[in-house]
Length: 310
Image (cartoon, rainbow, N blue to C red):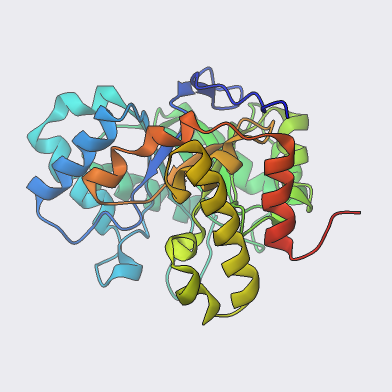
């Protein structure tokens, strides 16, 4: 069986002109530790070759930390070692207001982005993303707000996260510059972007794809026995067994195979790994070693679906 061509080369962030390592690092669980520990995580990511760090103003809130805690911790690291800033592409997200829950008005986006920049102790970010779509904000108004903020030098490129294809198209229709990236949840367990038009649109428009939760929020790290006890247990256990089968053949971890599944899609997806353990972060490049055939890839997909494709 012919192996899929999964290039280890840097991947473009859409039409931004930026290229990044084929795996990114997410900072959802970054908060709640000392600066020394945070620095060790960042060093591990950089030493692994990772060049895109993805955070958000809301990161930390789901982990018993204050709103903005992940960005603030990154800011403390950069305060101690400002030269680190030049070694990675910095991406953040705004637009979630706890209790509202979404606000993409110009006033809120401006306030949120300014607060993010202050917490991180930077003057601008490379990629600014609307975290979730605000259905009460007209895309013309969102585009106008983004245009102003970009002109003021607060960010270089704009992206969206968790947007439906129609929402991406509506926003792009009112922007004079291209949306650089889309950030959907995508893994061999969460496969909706394959079928709802998300990845097709990204390839049509030339958007970079940053896939969050490529390990299904930790589900793919469970033992088969643990997986069997949860919802859709039989299907998840079968998927884990399938990943393990390929992992043994390839001499890598199950997680590396799961990340390779995401990377194999022709949209040139950059999976965002979320591990906060330096030893696991250091293994990020293992996914680049995996060789999958079409039969492997479709076998993983069909096992995940619990059904055969037509």
